[in-house]
Length: 95
Ligand SMILES: [Zn+2]
Image 1 (cartoon, rainbow, N blue to C red):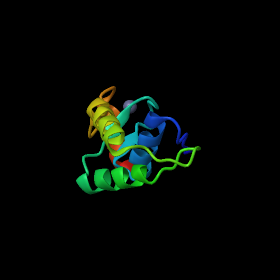
Image 2: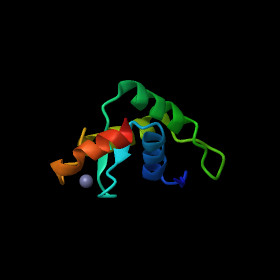
Image 3: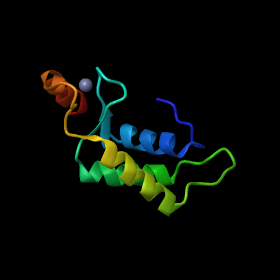
Image 4: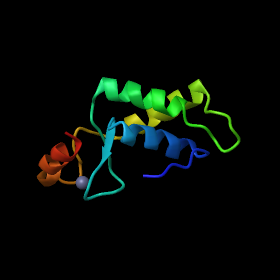
């Protein structure tokens, strides 16, 4: 996936997804699932801290933390809430 580093949400989502702290449901691209892996979430945060915006600066710590909290709070816990039927598939994708 690509990242728009100048967009806070995009940058944080990129960090979360590329470290597998979250996964997008393969059937519902708007559903973000929190895997629940603390190490992955820490890794995601460290990655987001290194994302450089087009003006050469980086996101501030407080701003990043806020967006991480917001996205993780919005994410579904462990499986897609839209359909339990495909949760087994998701587990395989994120495993
Ligand atoms: Zn789904």
